[in-house]
Image (cartoon, rainbow, N blue to C red; front, side, top):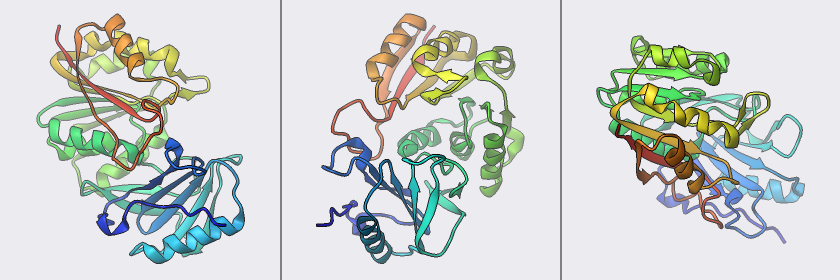
Length: 300
């Protein structure tokens, strides 16, 4: 018996926008905690965190290929295998595409790295920045491919400073700005170790909006359970009075209380405002396991 992936009602989706179609990793669907499905037009990407039977994979790929309007390719990424290889299952071979989210465009790559270039669970966070960045000077820490920077400029930011250790990721961020025909004179790219570059961060400030979206763990550079406090303690050196602070956390083992307690201990001048929840497709069987995005106001 085939255990079918059951994406959200496809008739209710705007398939002009990239998005997650099925989120099994939240453990909300029995026997499917190892499966995610993303729409990165014109590609459906199935991500597997454990091996599956080929018949199951082929049957589900055929269903997705035939039911998703505009789908030209179904690919699978094996996150359960060394180096997370990607293979073509059906249709045409795509090693890259350009997707749309919130009417902005982003470069996506398949088979070159573990991540494609855009974290879809952060859509609502990007919407908030788009709506709250007008005339602001923005600090974007752990910028990756600069999606927050793209939406900040689209939202009317005065200046945005992107910090990330990976210069290759920042180069892709420049390409994302160019793809949207944005003026990069307002955008600064700093390819440095954030934990060792406080003077560089302060050089471009003070900031009206600070976004901090760190990885949970990167060998030799980041262990966020240990390191988040170091960043939070520096907020008074970076933030304008009344600045908005967006703190993000994507560790399944650390919840809201981890961030709230860290802020209370290391920067009590930051007052909690609200949470930004991921899109509804990101169902979680256990609250607090998925992406956490908390908003604070800096009130010295």
